[in-house]
Image (cartoon, rainbow, N blue to C red; front, side, top):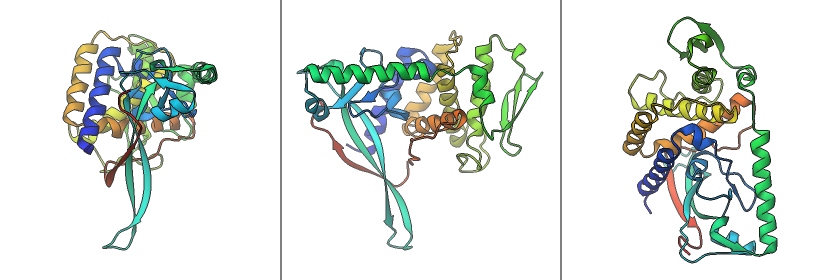
Length: 305
């Protein structure tokens, strides 16, 4: 499978999930999926697996399911997830060590797509409990997210109708909460600007080409990171947003993602890293790149049972 085909398949899956759920926030709001080896799926994989079709939030490859006393039912189809493997190689021309990223493909099944023995069912129940506990433990009060952002930018609350982040001043300006239709809209806005602020050179150093300009590719990609980050934070704060304009909003993002199929893979992990920084969590998401990418043979046993 060519890398363009992988990006296209992942993008279409996420667009389908977005259109079904109705918002990025609702996609994040689904309990975190976890693998049979106890590893939580993050970044783009969490969005890929954000479907609510299955009650279980536990996934595994064909072999992982078999090794845990299960058998995938005949006719069940797998879902593609990806992981990045970072390697270092010596450049033949410059002699310098350069980073290379291998895009590893895995085909996974939800455990609802399989039948397990008693031991397997007990393990799944235990993993599902950790997922349920994580939902409870991940809940954070809305204002404490703002207050808890360590070494973050300065923030001013104004009577203006414009919210923005100024990288050169490392400053967020946002209208006072009284100018918003609801507290949820206020916090979603400030979380968005906080998401932008994580890209500063003294934090995650995400602004690769200096100042971005409205409408250009770096600007649009950064907007996606901030939007995903804000949606993630509003989900853990359990804020309810007004989605009356969701159809036009989703259509706009769907068109952009279809025209730029690498964006969602690029942005999703950066959005979770941004949220982790704001929340003071040590991130386990790798800093993958869309440059120097090679495709490694899929780690799978079957795409379809």
